[in-house]
Length: 397
Ligand SMILES: Cc1ncc(COP(=O)(O)O)c(C=O)c1O
Image (cartoon, rainbow, N blue to C red; front, side, top):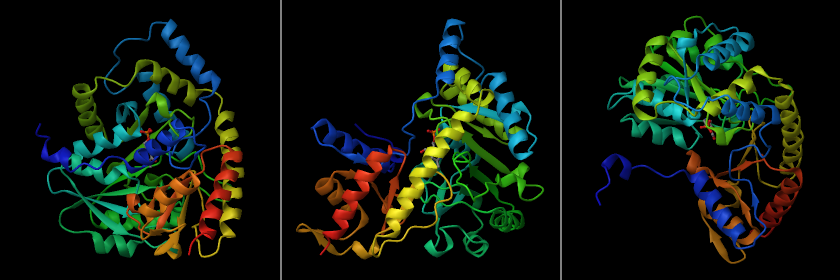
């Protein structure tokens, strides 16, 4: 059967592919330590699940407005007002089936064939594919480890061309765990304003920021940014709700209208029950977010200390999210128990085969020579997994 040209070019998600391999090994009885998937290991807090059960009992089991129930849209707008001082009207909010779907909506609504989206690398695996799916052109700009993998104003200025329309920023970052400061964002905002760019600000890890680091929402750093920014966020990471599939955008009203129309044709609406659960997440007690962050903070500190002891491996300061992005370039071009490893993909496969630890190769994020560990797993597993990686590194010849 002939598959469309567009889909023939689509790369399946590398993180999901590694997780699937790890699952296969687990099914075969192996104890695999899984550092591959970017999802919190915690259960969704009880009060959120109870709200979902209540929603079902109360009959919230029908189609909803395409862009989400009014109560949830209002709660999202209120949250941005309270947390960041940004004023949005509920009609500027579009609730989708996860932040990934929200990004698909954004690119589909904004891009015409040939329009460029500037994406700093390392980048989250789905960005470039979603841009291509919407007939846009991803313009990948490499950043430096020494700069915390953050795009500099000079790099942005050099990347802007006549076809450039959108800058994509992900902060705190998947895959690097680094985060832009307010000053760094403001310097980028100046270039954005000079060049009349739009910005997609993926702030899905906003609530997972470690002590000593301060998150700033992109539209707050300069006047005039709110009119040219689409903020993407959701409940998946902050509330351990990856399976519920609720994400959203906050955008200028005309874009929200376009995305609402798109959604009304593509999916009708996000799951009615999940929307009520997300409402409970936003409006209910926030202690659960703090508790999860406390655990992530302990894990992050442990990972940081262990990795710092590894010879010839570096890792930028982890400011947010739950990823460590390791520079393993000194360990390429070497052999591991007779297996020659030339690149990060082969390195991850050899690690999985020999030590049963699943990670994701940097090449999937546009950064060869690196590997991403997700420490969204229990402390014991983290200890065991890092012991195994240490043994793997020591076996390099
Ligand atoms: C940077 C980033 N944006 C968006 C998403 C998608 O989130 P969701 O599960 O809500 O679709 C992820 C999930 O891994 C992510 O890491």
